[in-house]
Amino acid sequence: MLTVAFIREQKEIVLAGLAKRNFKDGEELIQQVLDTDLLRRTAQNQADELKARSNADSKKIGELMKSGRQDEATALRAAVAGEKEQIKKLEETWTQAEATLQQLLYKIPNVPHAHVPAGKGAEDNLVAHQHGTVPTLPADSLPHWELIKKYDIIDFDLGVKISGAGFPVYKGKGAKLQRALINFFLDQAAAHGYREMQPPIVINEASGYGTGNLPDKEGQMYFVPEDGLYLIPTAEVPITNLYRDVIIPEAELPVKNVGYTPCFRREAGSWGAHVRGLNRLHQFDKVEIVQIQKPEDSYAALEDMCRYVQSLLEKLELPYRKLLLCGGDMGFNSAMTYDLEVYSAAQQRWLEVSSVSNFETFQANRMKLRYKSKDGKTTLLHTLNGSALALPRIVAALLENNQTAGGIAIPKVLVPYTGFEVIN
Image (tube, rainbow, N blue to C red; front, side, top):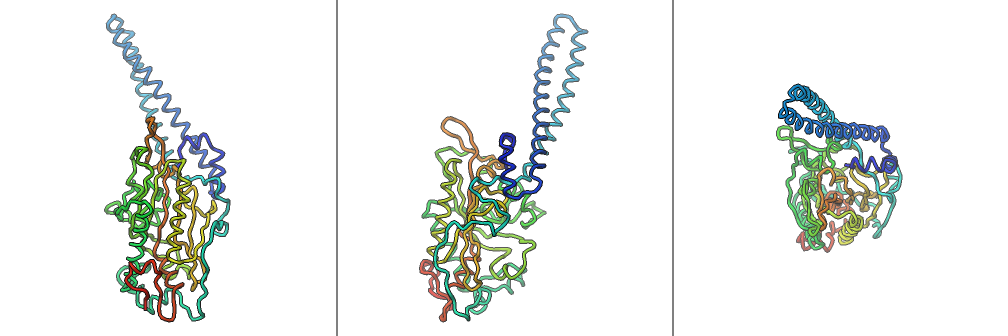
């Protein structure tokens, strides 16, 4: 969430950033924020002035009574009563304006970093880096949704039977491959300085608002109305909210956490061949990395997080590319996002497997996440997160790219985790 002070002092920068996002009604919404903020501050200042006058008049009443000037004391008492009534009305105006302002701020996305390119959609993203050779498969190669049937490792029909579409059942070597990837990713993160966390997979409303998933993505999250809880769309949400309403001592920065969780997304409105098989699911496994950094260090951390995710893909021997997302393709909360995509040889297209984002102070302002410097000053922190990695499309690419006449070859780095070298 943008701060009101930033909007008030940097209005033109905010409007330019919203335009880069192709955000509709930006000027109208920003003006509503400024008008509501002025109403709030005016009411608060008038109330403060009246309180000071009322307190002074109340003291004077006692002095008048002591000096026997009862008529003047009675008149002043009536004036104080009127002042208190005005104060009450001003406080009501201020409180209402504060609530309205909060709801308006929730509707405004983050301002993109200056280096984020303008653009309307995925076609305007910039390829920042590409690694590896795109494999060429024989004509009889199969997409992963056929391979999983051939080797009986993932069953969508059983998932439909017990839950519904988009909830696969992993079987035998398919289940072991899932577990191997999770453990490999967690071990790699620990070696890179991340502290492992195992958070709850349901969150309350405050946590949803804290990371910006509410109200923006409310329709994409599964909701349990009886308990007021949401199933998490990613481990980013509970892990980042561990620090909601926290002031972190400067000596404890940066914070680097990693967590594995199942993730749940309704994916309402998704259909078509591009979401077939593992390409898009309602439930999937993911290892997430989260960092909390001082503002001056956050963009170096973003690049480091990208290099780390790239190292995972290289160890898995998957060809990949790194994209800098344009303003029109970024998430609501992000100031800058890189997507990492792997090439699926059987599908002959790139599949997104990770998004690494810097939110700057957007989430921290919602969560009141700050740090205290040595001089005692408190400052909002920057939050970052990245998929490291999401499993479904990684599995899809591994199955498709590594298919041979003798089965599906397992990358060497995973063999100590799987206990087998081939799926056959």
